[in-house]
Structures are given as structure tokens and as C-alpha cells.
Length: 122
Image (cartoon, rainbow, N blue to C red; front, top):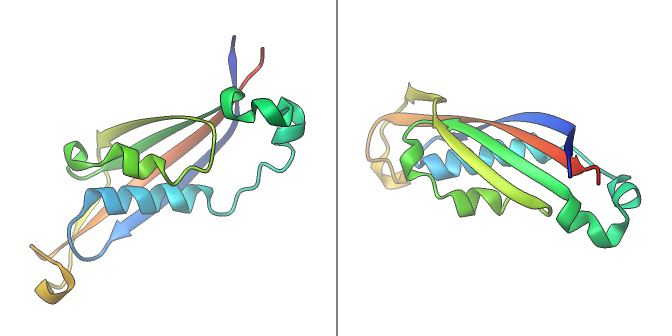
């Protein structure tokens, strides 16, 4: 079995209030996949095998990666064998402090995501 890359898409996500790295990471993955359609993939993989033969790997760079709920981020992906790697990165930007919106600090978290879709060529 050899995986062949089929698609790589980048995305960015922001949590303006609340300093939640999971929310920023989830939004980055959503941004990466929101405007893509793999319309012919079920024909290429024979529809009944899409779930096993389509591999989707997410690489996220964000502040405080140890606090990211990986399972929550992977829920953004509609199908496939899903894997995730989270690394330190992204950005913390100064922002207005609004505790009524959930802020604990005056920071905004920004995450970047690369979503790679591979196909089992077996």
C-alpha cells in the first residue's frame, strides 16, 4: 500500500475572544477545506472504499498546541482516515480586552493549517 498525495490545502483560523487554541485550529481546518470538492474521488476509489482509502492528514501550527483538543479539530473533516499533528506556531496578536465576550487576556489566537489528502493507490 502506497499513499499518493492528491490535494494539499492551507487555511487560517482566528479566535478573537476567549484565547482558545482549539477554536482557532478548528477554524483553520474549516477554512482549508471549505471551498474544495473532491467530486470524482468516489468514482476513482469505488464509493464503498472511500472511507478506508482516503487519508486526510492535518498539520496545525498554533499558540499553546498542548491545549488543542485534537478530536474536536478532526470533526471538521467529513470523511477519510483522519490524523492530526499539532505544533507550536501561529500567532498571538494584541487585541481589545472584553471579559464579557470570554476574554481572559487582551490576546487573539491565530492558527494555520495544512490539510493533505492522500489516496491509497493499492
